[in-house]
Image (cartoon, rainbow, N blue to C red):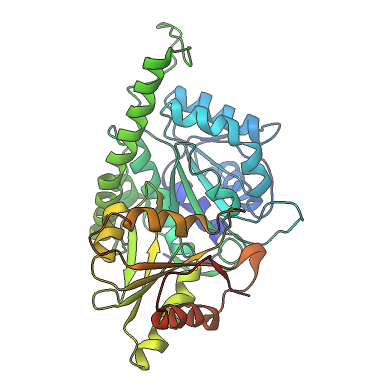
Length: 385
């Protein structure tokens, strides 16, 4: 069924189709509509779920954790300052191996106050232990919300998942979205049955006990192993989604015209649309360029980027965030991953689109063109204005 939806509605339909059982969320722009849609689904009897009203984002995640510990399928949404406020219990949810799914329409972080999109705050959560999947458009948001539950609940993974997409640009802009039939989603995503952390009054247990140094390291190592296992699960989940529904998003790294490219632009989120247009224009002018969109920021697509780096001459990384004193965090991670190659390509970093500043085709042409004629490493990341 084709419907005109914005990204927020698409996330809500994804959670509905996944038969979410518990929803808790605090209103915050631009994520508020996600909870509003789900409340309407619940009140209309279209979704058999309970909405639990929290006091704020911190308690939102605590509610989600408790619900997940009972074996429920749990969904939430937040953005910007709300995600920052939620930072502490994010570690608890990941450490507790709770397969919660959270939609995050990316919005800038204060100060100064700005309601428009960038990746600043979500990149700051990269070390919490949550899987991060970044979407380009509303269709991918809906599909990825469904995929996210299957990834999170896989016994090899059991980690929470953020489904991230650009605020306003995706969250509040409408486009045609195909809503798959409920019975097809049910066949793809079976009901969740928790085996590892269920609160049962007849079988008391302690959750969140203290640990000595060795036990703590063992638990953290298990989380690392689960994140590593998620790589294969993400790819398999996306491929099986393609077989059933006819749509795929490249698994962990979505590549466009990269097969014979000498220069590739790497980025995340909605900028990929303008990047592909820039690549197409440059191809018409004879420049062998391509685009690689990082869909899975955590776990990071090491193998895919290394395979790409082995056959290209240079990479332009466009960050929608900055780490003051370092530059673009995505560029620094791409450099780190490629540094061990026998012939590592030059990696050039660009910071753009902060606070919703336009990232145009012209901006991305400039990045690709400057990399194509560069003769040596850049001393620092450039800012695209």
